[in-house]
Image (cartoon, rainbow, N blue to C red):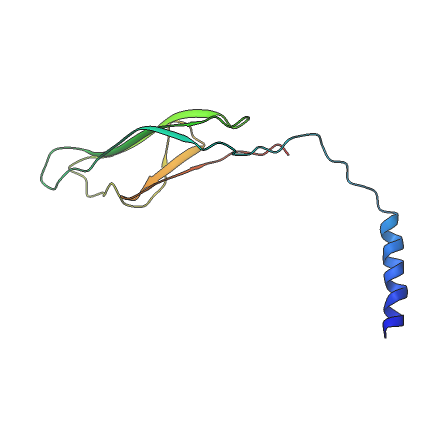
Amino acid sequence: MHYAILPLLSLALAGLSNAVPVVQRDVARLSESEPWKLSNIRVIEAKDGTRVHSSVSFDIVDINRGLEFSTNCSYSVSPDSDEDLEKPGWRKCGLKFVDFQYTGDKIEIRRYYKDPA
């Protein structure tokens, strides 16, 4: 049985030797080597019965080459609303390709981009 496989393997390898190499473009892949910088983080969680808006806001900057951006993210809930500030859900930031969600104990941020490589 081993003898039957070896000729097939040698034919397969001979076929590979005629393969055309793939030409790679000289484009560097984008990478996140530096962390995003968050600043001016402010969370206001109003108590029941008060007339204060609950809100979360912060500034975010990405300094990674080719991925740079700077924007503000914020979300506010009216005291008359039944909505909860901590209700999971993605909210748009100032730039349409960045959004976030606040869940009470953490802020999650995501961004969209197309890698040219």
